[in-house]
Length: 388
Image (cartoon, rainbow, N blue to C red; front, side, top):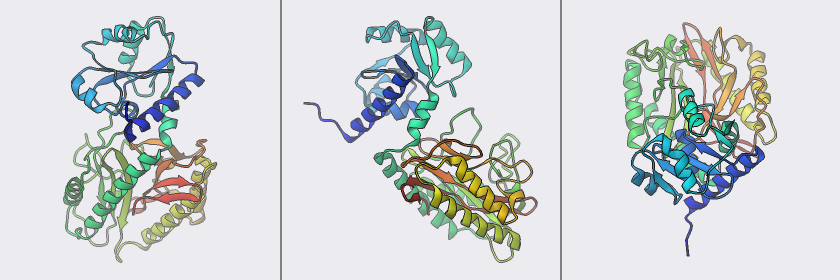
C-alpha cells in the first residue's frame, strides 16, 4: 500500500489541473524547462526537462545529478539525461513516441533551445503553454498560502528590526547590509526569481532623498542609484541625512515563496508634499485592497488607483514622473513577477487565492518618493494583507 504525503497530493493536483489545461488546447503533452515551472510541477529545480503527458504520470529527465533530482522530485520516473538528443528515445521508452502536438513555455525558452526541440521532434507542432501554466500558478493552493504567510511573518521581523536600527548618517549601502544580514539569519534565500530575460536583479532597494526618485532601465517607478552603471539599481554610498525620505523596498524569499514590501521613512523635516503623498498612497492601498474581490478585473483596480491619485492632484507623480509605469501591483509566489498584474487595461479577472503585491507610489524628482507596498491575498471580502 502506497501512502501519499501531503506534498504528493499537492503535486498530483497541480499536474491534474495542468493536464486539463492541455486537453483544452488539444495537446498530447508538454515539455517544461523553466526552473520555477519545473519546480511547481515536479518538486525539484535541478537541470531537467519534464515531460507532462495529457494523461498519466510525468517523466523527469535530469542532466546533472539525477540522484538529487530523484531524491527531491515527487515523481517516480526520473531518468539520467546525457545529451539533448536522448530526449526522444527516453520518451519513446516510456511509451511516448510520435507526439504531434506538444506545449512549450515559449515566453521564456531561448530561440536556440526551441530550434533544438524542433530538430529532434521534426514532425511536431508546438504550442505556447506558458499562459495556461501562469494562469494556473496565479491561484495559490492552501499549502502555498501557508508558505506565503510564513514568508510574510519572517519579512515583517526584518522590517521591525531595521526600523530600530536605521539612523541618519548611515549610508544606503550600510542600511542594505543590515537589512540583508538580518533577513539571512531568518532564512531569507538572498535571491529572487524573476520570470523573463536576465536583468541583474539585486535583493532590494534602499534609496534616500533624491536617489529615491531616480529611474533606470527597469520597468519600475523608481530604482535608486546603485553602485555602478552595470548595476543601476538599489543602494549607493550616499548618506541618509535628516530631512530626506528613506525608501526600503525588498522582496523576501523564505522557503520557496516570495513576498514584497516597501516602507518609506519620513521625519518632520521632509517636505510637506511628500507627507501628503504618503497619506494618499495609504488611502489608495486601503481602497484598492477593499475592492479586490473575486470577479473584479485587474484593470478596474488600476483605474480606481489612478482616479484617486488624480483627485488628490498628484497624477503627475503617480508611479513615476515623466514616463510613468502603467501598473500598481504584480503577482508574487515562486517568482517576483507572477500574475495577476494590476495594470492599465488588464483583463485578468481576480479569483480567490490570487496573491499580489500592491505598491502605490509617488515620485518627486530632486526630492524623493512616498508610498507603500504590501502583499495581499484575494478573498471573498476583499484582499487580505499578509505583510505588516
